[in-house]
Image 1 (cartoon, helix red, strand yellow):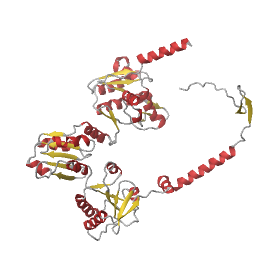
Image 2: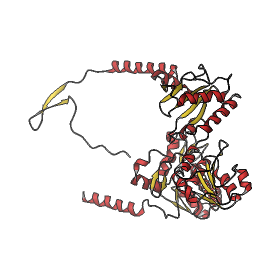
Image 3: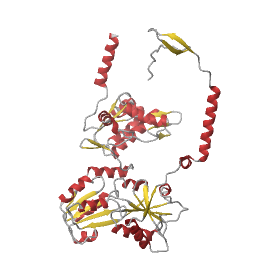
Length: 493
């Protein structure tokens, strides 16, 4: 036993000395893992037509170096268990048969500012190997970029914040924040640029204003204060940083006033590039009026409803005037949207939106509106499970002026001439039918019946129980032929 403890202690010390440890902060370490499936010539991470394990590792190296270049990472440590490829880079003359790989990888590495390569055992780089192995063994055909040290630290400090992989965690002064932004690469980069940008940008000239608007993109609304004291919006910029871009421009020249459609300063201009919308606020800038204007302009005047825009409503406490049409791309929509926009200008305490049954049928059906219903239908939705219909004005007629009808609808809503209803929830069978179809239901029922029949045929009589005396004199019950002895099982790796 003493020898076993001594050997265990030695292994523990070796692991501490030679095992995994975080690289230097200024040198991020990238562990390269690869796996190869000989039967179907697939290699991790998700490469096809791979004819050998060496080729799989080579493709993984290429992909990793390209990823580091795309992320603009320099001074990178590349680690791999493949001694052959590490040797072709560090000592190419010793590996003449692998000259092709040596030339290719060395040329790619030299495009980085500085780099190092090292060989490590699979155990020391186990997460990288498991990620690559999951591609060929579990059909996880995705690409991963994993910083093992940071994941280890995160899981040690707050394991509840990591729910799944791959994931992205944002830390603001050491405080973890969940990421709800876009997942596409270009949009993700733009979102992160917004996250690390100043709360309020200071624009010194007309060209700076133009560059700021162009660099902001179309994912967020833009608020620019012309002739406005920075201190007035610095608090709003900090509070709503994740929702919009904020800036102040010192100069409000005549050209700028024409370009951004305002006629005096100070003024706060709000723009929605994605929806081509524009609003101007001339004050008062105290007593919460400025913040109210900002909050109302996080959303465009008229919001088309889809899976993405529904997320924007999460933090907005206003009710929505929702118009449901058959097809939002129909040529007749122009007049209706114009009327809704005019009504939205005069009723900023409400959000105005529209949705097409053709485009988002399951959402429209929640309000008892489908292709068989009389459309356009107009309601006031609380953003949760209830909506209100104005008595006598449930729809918008194409034969009458749209703005007049919308105005009457809003007047009836303000006067309380409404009927509350709950949004429609599909029945259980309706949900099943919508998800997998009735034929699939029949197949499932048939399979369940077959399994139950086989179980009933295979049931055997329960073995008799016998009485046995326990060491303390009490009677205990055990199954005949069963033993109470428990032998330790060999640990499976």
